[in-house]
Length: 389
Image 1 (cartoon, rainbow, N blue to C red):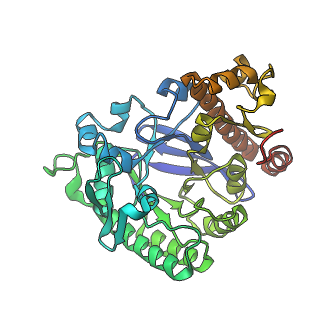
Image 2: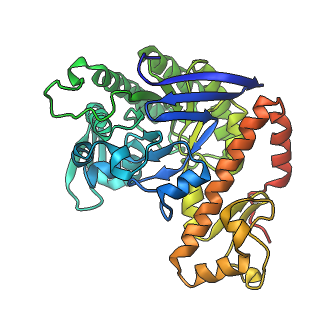
């Protein structure tokens, strides 16, 4: 850990589950925590005021999208991402690695970096570990991620090793750039340091291969980061395999550093991953599914467009205390969704994020009282991934 504004401490343990506090230049985050995804500087369909009301303590921004539009230089000149978007709580920015992975035919990966064509105008760009670090320095997030090489879950061991070794080499380059004293405020370089208290996390790769995951942990930890992420999951592998990889990898990471599982997932994934020692999560699933008419409830997914809800005057989730469930019926939400009303996306998103954030609150409380395993078993009994009928 470094001596900047960033710090992390574990306050309670219950098995492998950890209750902690993450301190940043823009405030503290109680962990385990879920980060709503604000891809382009906004969590889709809701406002920053809504996020505050929901109790969100940290959000995620997307480096790839913010770099292409409006540009990291513009955001830096505006005072950094916090000031630009009107959010004064912590922000984590990813490196753009996953988005470049998703571009498939529009990108080329080599040791220097990732070359890709913008999905906006087709322009050619080269994102190197150093450039990804500089972009996030200008954005001024509280936590910046290193550039990594992510593969599909079906990749064989040789391809996974190649990506893991490239990720480790990129991590060392990114760390060297991040710690370069020449980038301090007033150094006269083109890079504007928007947040001197920024921390940097390394990313563990290795696909579904335990030996590669172990080697990746060793190489990444040896570089020395403020926290560590488990990357390369939720890319198509069976959920049982994902849990096995998390269970193998998380305990290998330093006890005194936060552990972040990138891009996961369903509500039960959060509980199962906390049980394996994970502290931080992000995923577009609750917001994307909300816009597509799926509400995630204590009983499982609910497809609001189904005809059976046309005259259902009950709330989406009778056990939920969110604004949507306290004020509106399934029938009304179905009407809004089928009518194409923008309010449908807002109300559905408010519910889904409340459910995720409240689940994390319940997890933290259970860890403190030593009842996490009971909560885990109760969740298994009540939550089903199968849509409600």
